[in-house]
Image (tube, rainbow, N blue to C red; front, top):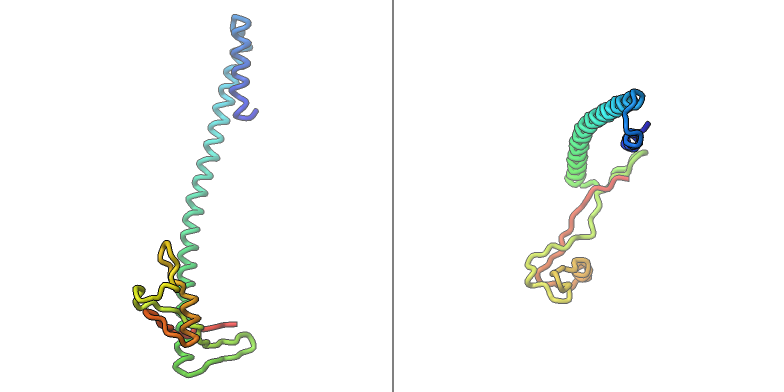
Length: 161
């Protein structure tokens, strides 16, 4: 019998006892058996709950360990990319080719750096919350137009294929 069926069975037995008006030994035995079976079911459910809670704790610890490991690997990858990039720039090498990889120091298209937002012309601002339209500014700066309060910053990055 399932745990949720016990209250229905108990109600049925109580109804039988009240209809008959007297508790037979058989009915009392059935009520005791039902109660002990219910207790066993509850205890078994609680055992499963505690086992699952223990698994949750160990899984959380493993997740934390893996997150820490991922962060460590990410930091090492970032450091190695910077190391290779800086070394290639110092050696004035733009490309290193191999059978497996092509490593290239490539100039970025440039990013807009806001020097003084108050000097930016209104056509580069979106109203409501003040949002600077950096893509439009970048395009105009690349085209040689001057945009007050902004400058185009060029940099290089490492491309691995």
